Length: 466
Image 1 (cartoon, rainbow, N blue to C red):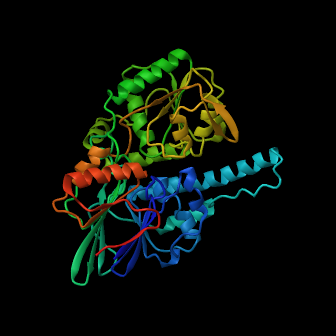
Image 2: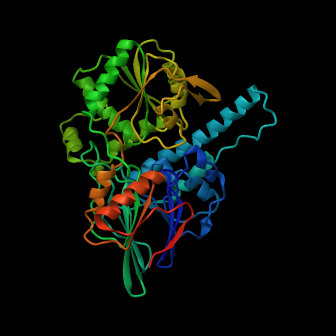
Image 3: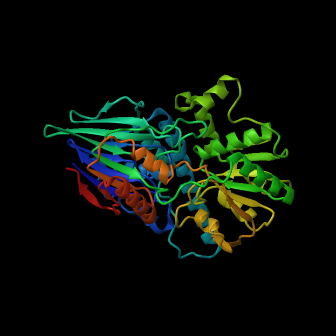
């Protein structure tokens, strides 16, 4: 039995692992690399023959875990993709949107090259197309939480709720080899406890090997007041100044959680009557998926729904689908709130809203999730004097703020609490999905507390699992 780390090794995107066990080759996640320093990996030939993979096990639908699936299929992968029912729906929306964005961005780049007279430039082509996405979607197969799924006579996998986004899962893989049983747990992305809408992450008590995320392995989330109070202050201050509140958001979970909080402020009349735009066709569709999956929701959300209220409907909210309507938002003179994808500002409509609002001192840009190193979001959050968007330098005069506590990831203490629930020492822990300093900081804490064997693998590292 062995594992190979094909992504999210000392970085937070491109999640992908190859586990060879029980006569099977299992791929766990197949995510897009979103940091600029590693984008070239998206275009490289997949490091393993895709046709040799028996199953792809998907922890959740985020692009950094699913974004290379269409390319994998294009290169020859034809096996089942196993994941939860909610993740199947979300992955379909996310990948279809990604295919459209790939084609739109390539077309926009070709148009810009022509306008700039760059006739000798390498032709811009999409990483994959909508046709590739359509070929991938029929491979998805449903797996229910807590129900062991038999892969072959030697291997079963059980999906446990990870509390990260709707449908997210931890994977418990049990392998029978040479008369012995071994359990390998992939944590996926572990969510925070006591968050609105979805259930808390599952607690497991046994594993021989753990592949564990470490996004916030070096720090804890700030506890500087309630999210509602902070968001209320941002909206009121910006409205008084006459600017816009622009929130780069992830279409899945963060957008819905923000709508939940904004809706509460509107219903309590703590903010002025203004228009709130959810400017993302995918986020609009995702919001509808949330309504269909009560099995993933916590008691608070179910209680609200059972009382007859709607989670994502309140005065002033506009759900924007068309590009034409999106463009009109930036011609409005009155204050508005704009939620648009992508969350790390790497693509999509948010870049147009940033180009319009970053130079305005009246506006506020609000970040609500992790900004990976090398992304546009990280550059803005560092409060540089200017950034480059759509081939042009944009001055940063807008107020830059960050909502703490909205992250979909557990912080260092949350990760340690999750690990502390295991009743016996694992044979090995591999920390992934975190920048090197975050993973090393978490490794140090784990060794100090329990003296467990911990590694921070590098890209393409391979390890034998005894």
